[in-house]
Length: 280
Image (cartoon, rainbow, N blue to C red; front, top):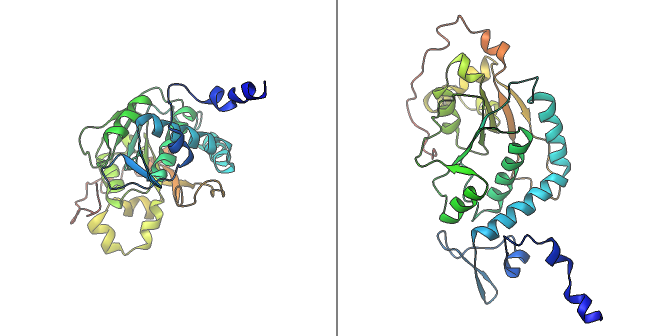
């Protein structure tokens, strides 16, 4: 009787049958790849094939970890106070740039998991889009599983908004933020944007000449104070601190943007001298 009871284990009840994660993979979340394109990992003398089901399992585990964390609890409270109606109109879409390969990066899996939680918090009624030049076939399958539409071309973040949109851009190059703002350099469109990404005020610590040549749209945003930001709370020991460090929720308050409504010189399009070499 004892051996029969041992066969009915809790793992079999809780494991999602559609995922069927390899036990070897399940035990080794932080695996090392043989090379950039390989889908095989080495554990001692064993070589194991990774699939989209394995990556989905990793993401589900990270979503659970985030949900239980103090970091996410504080982040939710911040969002509820600042971003949900009646403070702002309802967000419709999410556009995700530069998240990396979900298949190949533990960091990308955490960032993607947080984006999925944002989708639920903001009750997104439109679509979720994603683009990164390093996305693999496994990544595309994972995106499809979560109803995230892969952007087929490199937009370089020059997407013009047509509704309230959350741009999810953790740790992207400076040029991408500049391109996004330039594409929507209009007092109506700017009010439809929330950016989750690097703290843009950080770049004002660089020389003005650098910003004028690489990212001229960062200068009026930071110096003229039409951008408002809330820094992410600190992560805890259960979540690596390099994943969400120095990230902000950033937006353009209506009253601050409208203050420049009649300033035609302010809204003149600016020309970059050089494109950011790190831009995707």
